Image (cartoon, rainbow over all chains, first blue to last red; front, side):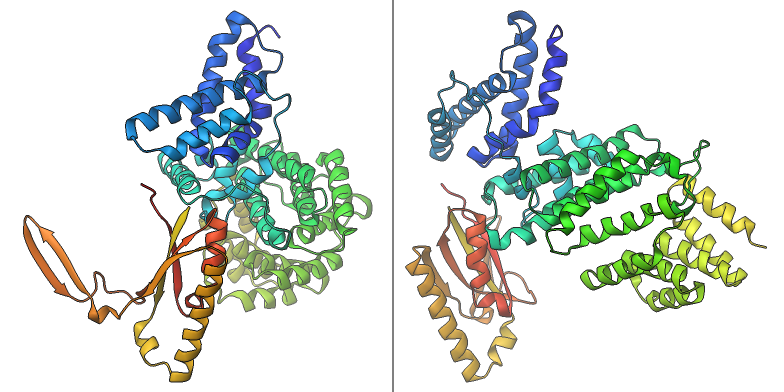
Length: 413
Length: 115
Protein backbone atom coordinates (compact mmCIF):
# COMPACT_ATOMS: atom_id res chain seq x y z
CA UNK A 1 0.00 0.00 0.00
CA UNK A 2 3.09 2.17 0.21
CA UNK A 3 3.69 2.91 -3.46
CA UNK A 4 0.77 4.81 -5.04
CA UNK A 5 2.25 4.43 -8.53
CA UNK A 6 2.24 0.66 -8.22
CA UNK A 7 -1.27 0.66 -6.80
CA UNK A 8 -2.44 2.81 -9.70
CA UNK A 9 -0.81 0.33 -12.04
CA UNK A 10 -2.53 -2.60 -10.35
CA UNK A 11 -5.89 -0.83 -10.47
CA UNK A 12 -5.29 -0.07 -14.13
CA UNK A 13 -4.58 -3.71 -14.84
CA UNK A 14 -7.62 -5.00 -12.99
CA UNK A 15 -10.27 -2.43 -13.73
CA UNK A 16 -9.26 -0.47 -16.82
CA UNK A 17 -11.63 -2.34 -19.13
CA UNK A 18 -14.47 -2.20 -16.64
CA UNK A 19 -14.14 1.55 -16.17
CA UNK A 20 -13.80 2.17 -19.89
CA UNK A 21 -16.81 -0.02 -20.72
CA UNK A 22 -18.91 1.73 -18.08
CA UNK A 23 -18.12 5.21 -19.40
CA UNK A 24 -18.23 4.36 -23.12
CA UNK A 25 -21.57 2.54 -22.75
CA UNK A 26 -23.03 5.82 -21.49
CA UNK A 27 -21.48 8.19 -24.00
CA UNK A 28 -21.13 5.90 -27.03
CA UNK A 29 -17.66 7.42 -27.40
CA UNK A 30 -14.78 5.02 -26.78
CA UNK A 31 -12.02 7.50 -27.66
CA UNK A 32 -13.49 10.16 -25.37
CA UNK A 33 -13.75 7.62 -22.55
CA UNK A 34 -10.10 6.64 -23.09
CA UNK A 35 -9.00 10.26 -22.87
CA UNK A 36 -11.00 10.91 -19.71
CA UNK A 37 -9.70 7.73 -18.12
CA UNK A 38 -6.09 8.46 -18.94
CA UNK A 39 -6.49 11.93 -17.42
CA UNK A 40 -7.95 10.29 -14.34
CA UNK A 41 -4.95 7.97 -14.04
CA UNK A 42 -2.62 10.94 -14.42
CA UNK A 43 -4.55 12.72 -11.65
CA UNK A 44 -4.21 9.63 -9.44
CA UNK A 45 -0.45 9.60 -9.90
CA UNK A 46 -0.31 13.26 -8.89
CA UNK A 47 -2.83 13.04 -6.06
CA UNK A 48 -2.36 9.69 -4.32
CA UNK A 49 1.25 10.12 -3.17
CA UNK A 50 0.19 13.32 -1.34
CA UNK A 51 -3.32 12.54 -0.08
CA UNK A 52 -3.03 8.79 0.21
CA UNK A 53 -4.66 6.03 -1.81
CA UNK A 54 -8.48 6.24 -1.65
CA UNK A 55 -10.52 3.41 -0.13
CA UNK A 56 -12.07 2.53 -3.46
CA UNK A 57 -9.52 3.37 -6.17
CA UNK A 58 -11.70 2.38 -9.19
CA UNK A 59 -14.58 4.53 -7.92
CA UNK A 60 -12.19 7.43 -7.36
CA UNK A 61 -10.90 7.09 -10.92
CA UNK A 62 -14.42 6.89 -12.31
CA UNK A 63 -15.46 10.03 -10.46
CA UNK A 64 -12.49 11.98 -11.82
CA UNK A 65 -12.98 10.57 -15.33
CA UNK A 66 -16.61 11.70 -15.28
CA UNK A 67 -15.65 15.21 -14.22
CA UNK A 68 -13.13 15.33 -17.06
CA UNK A 69 -15.83 14.20 -19.49
CA UNK A 70 -18.24 16.83 -18.30
CA UNK A 71 -15.54 19.50 -18.57
CA UNK A 72 -14.67 18.34 -22.06
CA UNK A 73 -18.33 18.41 -23.08
CA UNK A 74 -18.76 21.95 -21.72
CA UNK A 75 -15.63 23.15 -23.49
CA UNK A 76 -16.88 21.67 -26.72
CA UNK A 77 -20.32 23.17 -26.27
CA UNK A 78 -18.88 26.64 -25.81
CA UNK A 79 -16.50 26.38 -28.74
CA UNK A 80 -19.06 24.93 -31.13
CA UNK A 81 -22.19 26.84 -30.07
CA UNK A 82 -24.09 23.69 -30.93
CA UNK A 83 -23.10 20.45 -29.23
CA UNK A 84 -26.39 20.03 -27.39
CA UNK A 85 -25.91 16.32 -27.81
CA UNK A 86 -22.69 16.17 -25.82
CA UNK A 87 -24.08 18.55 -23.25
CA UNK A 88 -27.02 16.25 -22.70
CA UNK A 89 -24.71 13.30 -22.35
CA UNK A 90 -22.69 15.11 -19.76
CA UNK A 91 -25.81 15.97 -17.81
CA UNK A 92 -26.96 12.40 -18.08
CA UNK A 93 -23.63 11.24 -16.71
CA UNK A 94 -23.83 13.72 -13.91
CA UNK A 95 -27.43 12.81 -13.07
CA UNK A 96 -26.61 9.14 -13.19
CA UNK A 97 -24.69 9.66 -9.99
CA UNK A 98 -23.49 13.00 -8.66
CA UNK A 99 -19.73 13.27 -9.22
CA UNK A 100 -18.95 13.27 -5.52
CA UNK A 101 -20.81 10.10 -4.67
CA UNK A 102 -18.92 7.24 -6.29
CA UNK A 103 -20.88 4.07 -7.07
CA UNK A 104 -19.96 1.31 -4.62
CA UNK A 105 -19.17 -1.13 -7.39
CA UNK A 106 -18.76 -0.40 -11.07
CA UNK A 107 -21.25 -2.49 -13.08
CA UNK A 108 -19.45 -4.78 -15.50
CA UNK A 109 -20.28 -3.82 -19.07
CA UNK A 110 -17.20 -5.28 -20.71
CA UNK A 111 -19.28 -7.85 -22.55
CA UNK A 112 -21.21 -5.10 -24.36
CA UNK A 113 -17.87 -3.44 -25.14
CA UNK A 114 -16.55 -6.69 -26.61
CA UNK A 115 -19.63 -6.98 -28.82
CA UNK A 116 -19.03 -3.42 -29.99
CA UNK A 117 -15.39 -4.22 -30.85
CA UNK A 118 -16.48 -7.27 -32.85
CA UNK A 119 -19.47 -5.54 -34.43
CA UNK A 120 -20.15 -6.40 -38.06
CA UNK A 121 -19.67 -2.75 -39.01
CA UNK A 122 -16.06 -2.96 -37.74
CA UNK A 123 -13.38 -4.29 -40.10
CA UNK A 124 -12.66 -7.89 -38.98
CA UNK A 125 -8.90 -7.22 -39.04
CA UNK A 126 -9.18 -4.48 -36.42
CA UNK A 127 -11.56 -6.27 -34.03
CA UNK A 128 -8.91 -8.12 -32.03
CA UNK A 129 -6.62 -5.07 -31.74
CA UNK A 130 -9.58 -2.94 -30.67
CA UNK A 131 -10.54 -5.44 -28.00
CA UNK A 132 -6.99 -5.64 -26.68
CA UNK A 133 -6.80 -1.87 -26.48
CA UNK A 134 -10.19 -1.14 -24.94
CA UNK A 135 -10.79 -4.13 -22.66
CA UNK A 136 -7.18 -4.63 -21.58
CA UNK A 137 -5.71 -1.19 -22.09
CA UNK A 138 -2.77 -2.39 -24.21
CA UNK A 139 -0.99 0.35 -26.12
CA UNK A 140 -1.07 0.53 -29.90
CA UNK A 141 2.67 -0.18 -30.24
CA UNK A 142 2.44 -3.50 -28.39
CA UNK A 143 -0.60 -4.52 -30.38
CA UNK A 144 1.06 -3.46 -33.64
CA UNK A 145 4.12 -5.61 -33.03
CA UNK A 146 1.98 -8.67 -32.33
CA UNK A 147 0.00 -8.18 -35.52
CA UNK A 148 3.13 -7.44 -37.59
CA UNK A 149 1.91 -3.94 -38.39
CA UNK A 150 3.67 -0.59 -38.19
CA UNK A 151 2.65 1.21 -34.95
CA UNK A 152 1.46 4.29 -36.86
CA UNK A 153 -0.70 2.16 -39.15
CA UNK A 154 -2.18 0.25 -36.23
CA UNK A 155 -2.80 3.48 -34.33
CA UNK A 156 -4.60 4.93 -37.33
CA UNK A 157 -6.81 1.86 -37.75
CA UNK A 158 -7.77 1.95 -34.09
CA UNK A 159 -8.58 5.67 -34.24
CA UNK A 160 -10.72 5.12 -37.33
CA UNK A 161 -12.61 2.24 -35.71
CA UNK A 162 -13.31 4.27 -32.59
CA UNK A 163 -14.54 7.22 -34.64
CA UNK A 164 -16.85 4.83 -36.44
CA UNK A 165 -18.29 3.51 -33.17
CA UNK A 166 -19.13 7.05 -32.12
CA UNK A 167 -20.30 8.61 -35.37
CA UNK A 168 -22.31 5.67 -36.71
CA UNK A 169 -23.70 5.00 -33.19
CA UNK A 170 -22.77 1.35 -32.78
CA UNK A 171 -24.87 0.41 -29.73
CA UNK A 172 -23.52 -0.85 -26.41
CA UNK A 173 -25.99 -3.56 -25.71
CA UNK A 174 -26.00 -7.32 -25.79
CA UNK A 175 -27.33 -8.83 -29.03
CA UNK A 176 -30.82 -10.31 -29.14
CA UNK A 177 -30.95 -13.99 -28.22
CA UNK A 178 -31.52 -14.93 -31.89
CA UNK A 179 -28.43 -12.99 -33.04
CA UNK A 180 -26.21 -14.07 -30.16
CA UNK A 181 -24.51 -17.15 -31.71
CA UNK A 182 -23.47 -15.23 -34.84
CA UNK A 183 -22.39 -12.13 -32.93
CA UNK A 184 -20.58 -14.20 -30.32
CA UNK A 185 -18.70 -16.00 -33.06
CA UNK A 186 -17.21 -12.67 -34.14
CA UNK A 187 -16.13 -11.94 -30.55
CA UNK A 188 -14.57 -15.39 -30.16
CA UNK A 189 -12.83 -15.11 -33.54
CA UNK A 190 -11.27 -11.82 -32.43
CA UNK A 191 -10.06 -13.33 -29.16
CA UNK A 192 -8.59 -16.28 -31.03
CA UNK A 193 -6.89 -13.91 -33.48
CA UNK A 194 -5.26 -12.19 -30.50
CA UNK A 195 -4.22 -15.57 -29.14
CA UNK A 196 -2.65 -16.79 -32.36
CA UNK A 197 -0.84 -13.47 -32.79
CA UNK A 198 0.73 -14.16 -29.41
CA UNK A 199 1.29 -17.82 -30.13
CA UNK A 200 3.08 -17.91 -33.46
CA UNK A 201 5.90 -15.73 -32.26
CA UNK A 202 9.00 -16.23 -34.36
CA UNK A 203 11.67 -17.65 -32.10
CA UNK A 204 9.22 -18.09 -29.26
CA UNK A 205 11.35 -15.73 -27.23
CA UNK A 206 9.65 -12.35 -27.53
CA UNK A 207 8.27 -11.74 -24.05
CA UNK A 208 5.90 -9.06 -25.25
CA UNK A 209 4.31 -11.35 -27.79
CA UNK A 210 3.96 -14.15 -25.35
CA UNK A 211 1.95 -11.90 -23.11
CA UNK A 212 -0.59 -11.46 -25.86
CA UNK A 213 -1.49 -15.17 -25.67
CA UNK A 214 -1.93 -14.68 -21.93
CA UNK A 215 -4.11 -11.65 -22.55
CA UNK A 216 -6.27 -13.63 -24.98
CA UNK A 217 -6.69 -16.38 -22.40
CA UNK A 218 -7.70 -13.70 -19.95
CA UNK A 219 -10.33 -12.42 -22.40
CA UNK A 220 -11.51 -15.99 -22.95
CA UNK A 221 -11.84 -16.51 -19.21
CA UNK A 222 -13.76 -13.25 -18.96
CA UNK A 223 -16.21 -14.20 -21.67
CA UNK A 224 -16.76 -17.62 -20.10
CA UNK A 225 -17.47 -15.99 -16.75
CA UNK A 226 -19.93 -13.56 -18.37
CA UNK A 227 -21.59 -16.12 -20.67
CA UNK A 228 -21.17 -19.42 -18.80
CA UNK A 229 -23.73 -21.30 -20.90
CA UNK A 230 -22.20 -20.73 -24.33
CA UNK A 231 -20.46 -23.94 -25.43
CA UNK A 232 -18.32 -22.26 -28.08
CA UNK A 233 -16.93 -19.79 -25.53
CA UNK A 234 -15.97 -22.76 -23.35
CA UNK A 235 -14.53 -24.50 -26.41
CA UNK A 236 -12.36 -21.51 -27.30
CA UNK A 237 -10.97 -21.22 -23.78
CA UNK A 238 -10.27 -24.97 -23.72
CA UNK A 239 -8.51 -24.73 -27.09
CA UNK A 240 -6.29 -21.88 -25.90
CA UNK A 241 -5.43 -23.67 -22.66
CA UNK A 242 -4.47 -26.88 -24.51
CA UNK A 243 -2.16 -24.90 -26.76
CA UNK A 244 -0.76 -22.96 -23.83
CA UNK A 245 -0.11 -26.19 -21.90
CA UNK A 246 2.46 -27.19 -24.53
CA UNK A 247 4.28 -23.86 -24.68
CA UNK A 248 7.37 -25.07 -22.86
CA UNK A 249 7.52 -28.23 -24.97
CA UNK A 250 7.48 -26.38 -28.29
CA UNK A 251 11.17 -25.56 -28.09
CA UNK A 252 14.17 -27.64 -27.07
CA UNK A 253 16.70 -26.37 -24.53
CA UNK A 254 18.68 -25.01 -27.51
CA UNK A 255 15.66 -23.12 -28.81
CA UNK A 256 14.99 -25.62 -31.59
CA UNK A 257 11.46 -26.21 -32.82
CA UNK A 258 9.93 -29.48 -31.58
CA UNK A 259 6.93 -30.82 -33.53
CA UNK A 260 3.90 -31.98 -31.56
CA UNK A 261 4.55 -35.71 -31.99
CA UNK A 262 8.10 -35.39 -30.68
CA UNK A 263 7.36 -33.18 -27.68
CA UNK A 264 8.27 -34.46 -24.22
CA UNK A 265 5.03 -35.18 -22.39
CA UNK A 266 6.66 -34.24 -19.11
CA UNK A 267 7.05 -30.69 -20.42
CA UNK A 268 3.28 -30.30 -20.92
CA UNK A 269 1.49 -28.37 -18.19
CA UNK A 270 -0.78 -30.97 -16.55
CA UNK A 271 -2.76 -28.36 -14.65
CA UNK A 272 -3.69 -26.40 -17.78
CA UNK A 273 -4.62 -29.65 -19.53
CA UNK A 274 -6.89 -30.56 -16.63
CA UNK A 275 -8.62 -27.18 -16.85
CA UNK A 276 -9.01 -27.53 -20.61
CA UNK A 277 -10.49 -31.02 -20.32
CA UNK A 278 -12.99 -29.83 -17.71
CA UNK A 279 -14.08 -26.91 -19.93
CA UNK A 280 -14.45 -29.14 -22.96
CA UNK A 281 -16.50 -31.64 -20.98
CA UNK A 282 -18.78 -28.85 -19.78
CA UNK A 283 -19.19 -27.60 -23.35
CA UNK A 284 -19.94 -31.02 -24.82
CA UNK A 285 -22.67 -31.59 -22.22
CA UNK A 286 -24.53 -28.62 -23.76
CA UNK A 287 -25.12 -30.51 -26.98
CA UNK A 288 -24.27 -27.89 -29.59
CA UNK A 289 -21.29 -28.54 -31.83
CA UNK A 290 -19.04 -25.75 -33.06
CA UNK A 291 -15.67 -25.04 -34.53
CA UNK A 292 -13.84 -24.19 -31.32
CA UNK A 293 -15.15 -27.24 -29.45
CA UNK A 294 -14.05 -29.45 -32.35
CA UNK A 295 -10.59 -27.93 -32.44
CA UNK A 296 -10.29 -28.31 -28.68
CA UNK A 297 -11.38 -31.93 -29.05
CA UNK A 298 -8.56 -32.48 -31.55
CA UNK A 299 -6.16 -31.17 -28.92
CA UNK A 300 -7.71 -33.53 -26.40
CA UNK A 301 -7.13 -36.45 -28.78
CA UNK A 302 -3.44 -35.45 -28.96
CA UNK A 303 -3.20 -35.22 -25.19
CA UNK A 304 -4.35 -38.86 -24.98
CA UNK A 305 -0.71 -39.62 -25.76
CA UNK A 306 -0.03 -39.11 -22.06
CA UNK A 307 -1.92 -42.34 -21.33
CA UNK A 308 -1.52 -44.43 -24.50
CA UNK A 309 1.76 -43.18 -25.94
CA UNK A 310 0.06 -42.21 -29.20
CA UNK A 311 -2.39 -39.52 -30.37
CA UNK A 312 -5.86 -40.91 -31.10
CA UNK A 313 -5.56 -40.44 -34.86
CA UNK A 314 -8.83 -42.18 -35.68
CA UNK A 315 -10.70 -39.71 -33.45
CA UNK A 316 -8.72 -36.84 -35.00
CA UNK A 317 -9.77 -37.87 -38.50
CA UNK A 318 -13.42 -37.97 -37.42
CA UNK A 319 -13.13 -34.54 -35.78
CA UNK A 320 -11.53 -33.03 -38.87
CA UNK A 321 -14.33 -34.53 -40.95
CA UNK A 322 -16.79 -32.54 -38.84
CA UNK A 323 -14.60 -29.42 -38.93
CA UNK A 324 -14.28 -29.67 -42.71
CA UNK A 325 -18.07 -29.63 -42.91
CA UNK A 326 -18.19 -26.50 -40.70
CA UNK A 327 -15.55 -24.45 -42.51
CA UNK A 328 -13.79 -24.42 -45.84
CA UNK A 329 -10.54 -23.63 -44.10
CA UNK A 330 -7.51 -24.92 -45.99
CA UNK A 331 -5.74 -25.36 -42.64
CA UNK A 332 -8.39 -27.86 -41.58
CA UNK A 333 -8.04 -29.68 -44.90
CA UNK A 334 -4.25 -29.99 -44.47
CA UNK A 335 -4.55 -31.27 -40.91
CA UNK A 336 -7.18 -33.75 -42.03
CA UNK A 337 -4.83 -35.09 -44.71
CA UNK A 338 -2.04 -35.43 -42.15
CA UNK A 339 -4.36 -37.35 -39.80
CA UNK A 340 -5.50 -39.63 -42.63
CA UNK A 341 -1.83 -40.37 -43.36
CA UNK A 342 -1.55 -41.66 -39.79
CA UNK A 343 -4.63 -43.91 -39.96
CA UNK A 344 -4.65 -45.04 -43.59
CA UNK A 345 -1.13 -44.40 -44.83
CA UNK A 346 1.06 -41.69 -46.33
CA UNK A 347 -0.19 -42.29 -49.88
CA UNK A 348 -3.80 -41.65 -48.84
CA UNK A 349 -2.84 -38.44 -47.03
CA UNK A 350 -0.81 -37.30 -50.01
CA UNK A 351 -3.73 -37.95 -52.35
CA UNK A 352 -5.83 -35.63 -50.20
CA UNK A 353 -3.14 -32.94 -50.31
CA UNK A 354 -3.01 -33.34 -54.10
CA UNK A 355 -6.72 -32.62 -54.13
CA UNK A 356 -6.01 -29.26 -52.46
CA UNK A 357 -3.25 -28.17 -54.83
CA UNK A 358 -5.63 -25.92 -56.82
CA UNK A 359 -6.42 -23.78 -53.77
CA UNK A 360 -4.58 -20.49 -54.38
CA UNK A 361 -4.44 -19.86 -50.64
CA UNK A 362 -2.03 -22.78 -50.24
CA UNK A 363 0.68 -21.94 -52.74
CA UNK A 364 2.37 -19.66 -50.19
CA UNK A 365 1.32 -21.52 -47.06
CA UNK A 366 4.26 -23.15 -45.29
CA UNK A 367 2.37 -25.94 -43.42
CA UNK A 368 1.00 -27.23 -46.73
CA UNK A 369 4.50 -27.67 -48.17
CA UNK A 370 5.94 -29.06 -44.94
CA UNK A 371 3.09 -31.60 -44.70
CA UNK A 372 3.61 -32.55 -48.35
CA UNK A 373 7.35 -32.91 -47.86
CA UNK A 374 6.89 -35.17 -44.83
CA UNK A 375 4.47 -37.48 -46.64
CA UNK A 376 6.52 -37.54 -49.86
CA UNK A 377 9.57 -38.56 -47.82
CA UNK A 378 7.58 -41.41 -46.31
CA UNK A 379 6.71 -42.86 -49.71
CA UNK A 380 10.35 -42.36 -50.85
CA UNK A 381 9.65 -39.66 -53.44
CA UNK A 382 12.90 -38.05 -52.38
CA UNK A 383 13.35 -35.43 -55.10
CA UNK A 384 9.79 -34.20 -54.73
CA UNK A 385 10.15 -34.26 -50.95
CA UNK A 386 13.32 -32.17 -51.14
CA UNK A 387 11.66 -29.64 -53.42
CA UNK A 388 8.70 -29.38 -51.06
CA UNK A 389 10.96 -28.90 -48.03
CA UNK A 390 12.86 -26.15 -49.83
CA UNK A 391 9.61 -24.40 -50.66
CA UNK A 392 8.46 -24.68 -47.03
CA UNK A 393 11.77 -23.29 -45.76
CA UNK A 394 11.49 -20.36 -48.14
CA UNK A 395 8.02 -19.52 -46.81
CA UNK A 396 8.72 -19.88 -43.06
CA UNK A 397 9.38 -16.69 -41.05
CA UNK A 398 10.43 -18.44 -37.82
CA UNK A 399 14.18 -19.27 -37.85
CA UNK A 400 13.70 -22.18 -35.41
CA UNK A 401 11.14 -23.81 -37.70
CA UNK A 402 13.38 -23.11 -40.71
CA UNK A 403 16.23 -24.91 -38.95
CA UNK A 404 13.95 -27.83 -38.15
CA UNK A 405 12.86 -28.14 -41.78
CA UNK A 406 16.47 -27.85 -42.97
CA UNK A 407 17.49 -30.74 -40.70
CA UNK A 408 14.67 -32.86 -42.16
CA UNK A 409 15.77 -31.91 -45.67
CA UNK A 410 19.39 -32.79 -44.96
CA UNK A 411 18.35 -36.16 -43.50
CA UNK A 412 16.90 -37.24 -46.84
CA UNK A 413 19.31 -39.55 -48.66
CA UNK B 1 -30.13 9.51 -34.87
CA UNK B 2 -30.87 9.77 -38.55
CA UNK B 3 -29.37 7.59 -41.24
CA UNK B 4 -29.54 7.83 -44.99
CA UNK B 5 -30.02 4.53 -46.81
CA UNK B 6 -28.55 4.93 -50.29
CA UNK B 7 -29.82 2.34 -52.71
CA UNK B 8 -27.41 1.25 -55.42
CA UNK B 9 -28.23 -1.16 -58.24
CA UNK B 10 -27.39 -1.88 -61.86
CA UNK B 11 -29.52 0.44 -64.03
CA UNK B 12 -29.04 -1.64 -67.15
CA UNK B 13 -30.36 -4.75 -65.41
CA UNK B 14 -33.25 -2.76 -63.99
CA UNK B 15 -34.23 -1.52 -67.45
CA UNK B 16 -34.31 -5.05 -68.83
CA UNK B 17 -36.58 -6.39 -66.09
CA UNK B 18 -39.95 -7.73 -67.18
CA UNK B 19 -43.09 -5.81 -66.30
CA UNK B 20 -44.16 -8.49 -63.85
CA UNK B 21 -40.86 -8.34 -61.98
CA UNK B 22 -40.96 -4.53 -61.95
CA UNK B 23 -44.46 -4.59 -60.52
CA UNK B 24 -43.36 -7.02 -57.85
CA UNK B 25 -40.40 -4.85 -56.89
CA UNK B 26 -42.59 -1.75 -56.75
CA UNK B 27 -45.05 -3.54 -54.47
CA UNK B 28 -42.17 -4.67 -52.24
CA UNK B 29 -40.92 -1.07 -51.96
CA UNK B 30 -44.40 0.20 -51.10
CA UNK B 31 -44.77 -2.40 -48.35
CA UNK B 32 -41.28 -1.65 -47.04
CA UNK B 33 -41.87 2.11 -46.90
CA UNK B 34 -45.20 1.52 -45.19
CA UNK B 35 -43.61 -0.77 -42.59
CA UNK B 36 -40.98 1.87 -41.81
CA UNK B 37 -43.62 4.54 -41.64
CA UNK B 38 -45.76 2.47 -39.24
CA UNK B 39 -42.68 1.90 -37.07
CA UNK B 40 -42.14 5.65 -36.96
CA UNK B 41 -38.77 5.22 -38.64
CA UNK B 42 -39.44 6.80 -42.04
CA UNK B 43 -38.44 10.46 -42.42
CA UNK B 44 -38.44 10.59 -46.19
CA UNK B 45 -37.38 8.91 -49.37
CA UNK B 46 -37.50 9.04 -53.13
CA UNK B 47 -36.75 7.09 -56.23
CA UNK B 48 -34.35 8.78 -58.64
CA UNK B 49 -34.49 8.97 -62.42
CA UNK B 50 -31.63 7.10 -64.13
CA UNK B 51 -28.14 8.60 -64.18
CA UNK B 52 -28.65 9.38 -67.88
CA UNK B 53 -31.03 12.11 -66.73
CA UNK B 54 -28.47 13.54 -64.31
CA UNK B 55 -26.28 16.61 -64.75
CA UNK B 56 -23.06 17.24 -62.86
CA UNK B 57 -21.97 20.77 -62.01
CA UNK B 58 -18.53 21.79 -60.77
CA UNK B 59 -17.19 25.29 -60.23
CA UNK B 60 -13.42 25.68 -60.47
CA UNK B 61 -11.87 29.13 -60.03
CA UNK B 62 -15.17 30.86 -60.67
CA UNK B 63 -15.74 28.93 -63.86
CA UNK B 64 -18.70 26.55 -63.99
CA UNK B 65 -18.41 23.28 -65.77
CA UNK B 66 -21.55 21.37 -66.56
CA UNK B 67 -21.42 17.74 -67.64
CA UNK B 68 -24.29 15.62 -68.76
CA UNK B 69 -24.34 12.40 -66.84
CA UNK B 70 -23.49 11.15 -63.38
CA UNK B 71 -20.72 12.36 -61.07
CA UNK B 72 -18.91 9.02 -61.39
CA UNK B 73 -19.21 6.05 -63.70
CA UNK B 74 -19.85 3.03 -61.48
CA UNK B 75 -20.98 -0.53 -61.99
CA UNK B 76 -24.03 0.11 -59.84
CA UNK B 77 -25.74 3.48 -59.63
CA UNK B 78 -27.56 5.42 -56.97
CA UNK B 79 -31.23 4.82 -57.68
CA UNK B 80 -33.00 6.09 -54.60
CA UNK B 81 -32.77 6.80 -50.90
CA UNK B 82 -34.60 6.63 -47.62
CA UNK B 83 -33.96 8.96 -44.71
CA UNK B 84 -34.76 7.12 -41.50
CA UNK B 85 -34.79 7.70 -37.78
CA UNK B 86 -33.11 4.92 -35.79
CA UNK B 87 -31.79 4.72 -32.23
CA UNK B 88 -28.47 3.19 -33.30
CA UNK B 89 -26.56 1.50 -36.12
CA UNK B 90 -28.01 -1.94 -35.37
CA UNK B 91 -31.53 -0.62 -35.89
CA UNK B 92 -30.46 1.18 -39.09
CA UNK B 93 -28.74 -1.95 -40.43
CA UNK B 94 -31.80 -4.05 -39.73
CA UNK B 95 -33.91 -1.66 -41.87
CA UNK B 96 -31.23 -1.71 -44.59
CA UNK B 97 -31.28 -5.51 -44.61
CA UNK B 98 -35.00 -5.52 -45.24
CA UNK B 99 -34.85 -2.99 -48.08
CA UNK B 100 -35.92 -4.75 -51.30
CA UNK B 101 -32.94 -3.13 -53.03
CA UNK B 102 -30.52 -5.08 -50.82
CA UNK B 103 -31.45 -8.19 -52.80
CA UNK B 104 -30.69 -6.59 -56.20
CA UNK B 105 -27.78 -4.35 -55.35
CA UNK B 106 -26.40 -2.77 -52.20
CA UNK B 107 -27.54 -0.34 -49.54
CA UNK B 108 -25.04 2.11 -48.11
CA UNK B 109 -25.95 3.25 -44.59
CA UNK B 110 -24.63 6.72 -43.74
CA UNK B 111 -25.22 8.49 -40.44
CA UNK B 112 -26.51 12.02 -40.84
CA UNK B 113 -24.19 14.71 -39.51
CA UNK B 114 -26.44 16.45 -37.02
CA UNK B 115 -26.13 20.26 -37.09
